[in-house]
Amino acid sequence: MTCHDIGRHLHCYGVETVRSPHLDTLAASGVLFTRAFCTAPQCSPSRASIATGLYPHNNGVLGLAHDGFDWEISPGVPHAAGIFHNLGFESHLFGNQHVSLHPERLGFDGLHSPGLEHGNATGLTVASQVEDFLIAHGPDGRLYLEINFDDTHRPYPELPVADDWPVIPPYLPPGPEAAQEMRGAELAIEEMDAAVGRVLVALERAGRAEGALVIFTTDHGLAMPRAKCTLYDPGIEVALMVRLPGAPAPSTSAELISNIDILPTMVEAAGAPVPAHVQGRSFLSLLSGGTYEPTSAVFAEKTFHSYYDPMRCVRTTTHKLIRNFETAFAVEVPGDIQQGAVFRADPGRYSTDRRAITELYDLTADPGEEHNLSGTMEVRDLERRLNEELWDWMAKTDDPLLRGPVSSPRYRAAMQR
Image 1: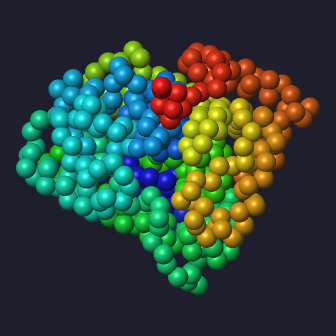
Image 2 (image 1 turned 60 degrees about the horizontal axis):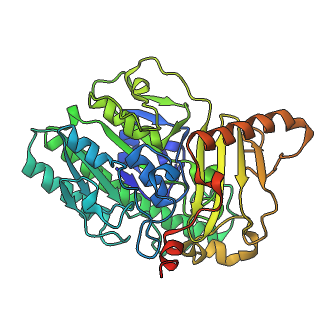
């Protein structure tokens, strides 16, 4: 199960004003990952990484996968639906996918989706489809279900500002504008959580809960200025909670996890070898109590969203290095976020020029990533090492940025005579 645009803004991650009882229960019955990150701070590239186990520049989805942007999973790159179909599972999609204009090509046996664009179905409508399907299908046979909820995508419900303000993330300017927007976001989260609860009950009623690997994750950070579409932690942090049947006692894990690791974990849990092309690492042993070799860093990228804005980053447990490859605003604020009260109250806060090519942050001393240490003597050796690690990752994964600027589907279409 996935939802849009909320990062880790959930009660089980310590946000006291969020009402998400069903996700709290799921987290308490499995493993809650506190250092899970996405490969990209935008919907389509991140979701394509979940579905393929590949970085966006390797799966082909470097930007948005809807009409007018037209990014697609590259031919020959298998989607999770096709992988599980070939393993003998029935693969079914509920809700909207956002990785292709042609969902019929992805390998699903059943598409229970009202369409591609956001807002065509509420989470409760999607949950109802899952309920009906599980009742009709019964307890037999192997199933791969991808269930996507759109409730938490903007626009948020408009609510009056109340005396009991919600938790305002520290990267937002405190005030009534942030309180108003976060109240709307938290109401949307509550509605999504209710849909999650109905799916979990449906699994129980269908007699499948005891044999179901259940994963809930988010695609990227909150749809707020200086979060979504940035490589700062508020843009790339994701919720991840996993319940494995027969696993040891529930726990919390602080291991660094990337969302390209989700697919190989599911494949290994299904008893199959992880396909050789997959770049992610299975974390099944973290769920089952086995031995796990921690990773020292995760990588994330942005190439296109509203416009061309290529950047790459490496994040360790203590530091982050970001390399910006073009001039742009200090942070990209997508159009739907610009319509919100926070941005409209102070557009200039986010529209200054981006001066630095390289940004380096000490995440322990500066969790808000406000003090760029790049170029200072005290971090010279660390910066050199992280730069080498980032360049090495780009080379090993054949990042197209190494060959020059990346063209978009729109550019390629415009060049046709």
